Length: 88
Image (cartoon, rainbow, N blue to C red; front, side):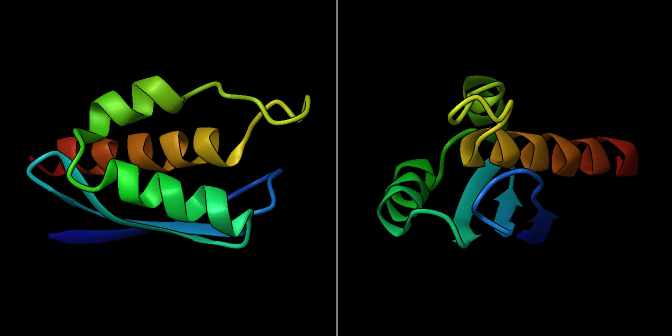
């Protein structure tokens, strides 16, 4: 299992960490943001297909900011998957 940390931009959560193993998402943790929302998202995504999660969450907007914590997670997942693809 490989751990990743993504520094967010434009949202309440300052950082998102997660692990990837065999294309699956684990241990999603948000530093900052709405505690209820981030805890729920973390539970829902445990063991989910990372590429599908990124596609589902990408582009979600929060109050006209042009991004959201979910969108930032999608961006972080895409970057991590890109690193994996380049390493293979």
